[in-house]
Length: 306
Image (tube, rainbow, N blue to C red; front, side):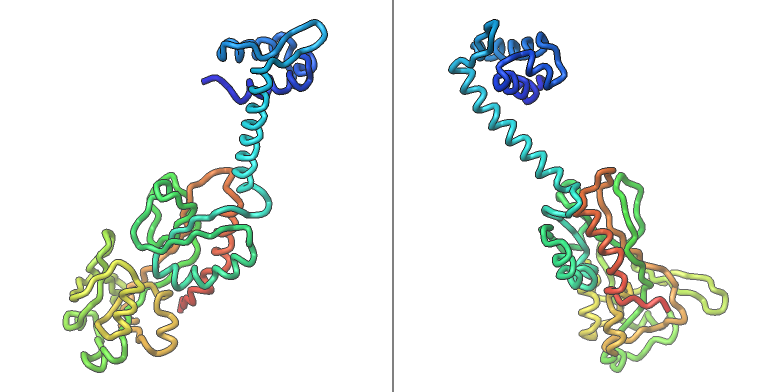
């Protein structure tokens, strides 16, 4: 494809300088090269744009029209490049699209939004909460906050924090159904589970004597696709839940949920990452948000590692 913008720039400079030689000196081209580029435009348009003489170049009526529009187009190109390159400026600015899981968003991300917006007022934060897996390119998202192990891909990821999983129940539920003492007791309890693709109906338990971890299938009459819903139904006394501790740490401290079977805890960890499309020239608004989360989100999660 012809470099129309480049040709317009050469023509505009030749018209403004009134000389192929003067334009050539500005562009680092020979006078004949400038003349050939202008002639190429005229041949393509089928009309004369410049009248040549030994003393100067003179615009024709068509040349004046072409110069006016060329200047406008070149100015628009410069403005577009300025706006796009602003993402690489020292001051973060522009729209930042972030997609996060519901539980992480409500518990960890949303409470930090006011501080981030105060620090970076020129960033327009576009935050979506969903536990469905999203394609960053298709959804035009800059960053996704997700739990679980990272699969091999072209995406980059930065670990924000990690949280142990814990089994909990509301005191009211335990008062009605009793408190399980060993993993086998779960057969008599309603276990709230997850329905997303990578969810498992097996919960891991560690033998306190041998340290061996075994998977035990659990059963229940309720499934959901996010930790926030499971937590809420657990608070309502519907059953037992096994979730990342960051979901329920505040509830445990308040006594509205009780941790269970801790001596048998399988010890598995829920890891939370910020995922993004890697690029050597990462926009400053993206880098600023990831750095901001990495410095603060673990504290907001109120994680206990004991």
